[in-house]
Amino acid sequence: MSDKKRVSRRQFLNYTLTGVGGFMAAGMLAPMVRFAIDPVLKPSGAGGLVSVASVEELTNEPQRFEWTVDQVDGWYESEVQRTAWVYRNDNDEIVALSPICTHLGCTVDYGSNEEYPDQFYCPCHAGRYTKDGVNVPGTPPTAPLPPIEYEVREGMLYLGEAQSEGGV
Amino acid sequence: MRYIKKDSKQYIPEKKYIDTMLIPLIPIDPANDQELPKQAFLRELNQVFTAIIEKEYRGRIFLSPDYYYLNGHHEKEIERLNEWIARIKQQPFQHIFLFTFDAKWRKYESKVDAEVIWVPGLGTGDLQSTETQSFIKEQAREISEFIQSHWS
Image 1: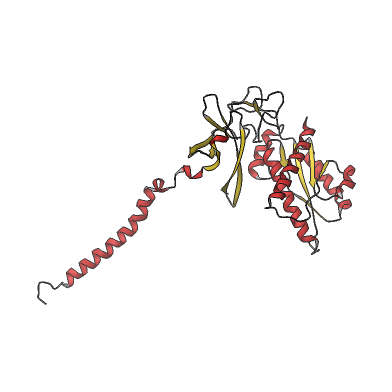
Image 2 (image 1 turned 90 degrees about the vertical axis):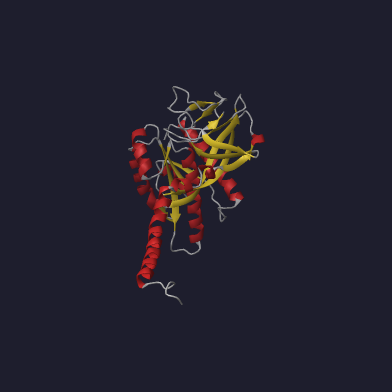
């Protein structure tokens, strides 16, 4: 062994300290970086969409579709049933509406009142909404039925959360 | 509405709309090994029913905490039950319904100051089975129609 290749005590300590220090710095920084870019790493919102029906089933008449999602609500984790009224409007666009009355949260039905066969009707306080979900003035609800997020993939209709602002 | 903080806070300003109280009437007999599983099942079934009705009509029906009584003590319970009802009426609730699978209440119907909804329960069953679920859905629909007929 020649003198050249010998590592001095000083050099050896330098290398080890830089190495260990580097690991420590990396260990501290990695979670901070992850924290900073956290929103990017979250699974996208589309993960909450559930395949409910084939697009071909949809008609001009609103139909009731039901599906279940897992919901964590404070202490309770439960399977919750979701419902939506879905139809194609005159422009052949899909409309998906939440059945939750914006007045006090009852479940509305389409065409269940004989006097208003082409409206959504709330059995609790006779609240009404036109087919496009707009509340009829003079009835208790003060906001339209919230639309439900939807997507069409490979001929299947996927439904998600109600896009509610306001309401209950 | 359920008997929880959030719903009760919402109830107070909207009192005039929420005029119906639904009370589950549930018998218990913790000393009886034979009755225990049956009664526990009926308690579960009762909660499933009332939860469905509450969900559909939460803007008008307030679901009361369960009323438990020792099996066979109907006669003794009438006074206490009527005290509950009297308090509830002070709110004011216009329509009070008692929901039970216990057929013996039919005998005391006239002594209770509320409407008794009696439904023949299921002896034993599996709440997860499709038959039970369709039975529950159908019965729940009929019960809500019965309640609605009191509204108009």
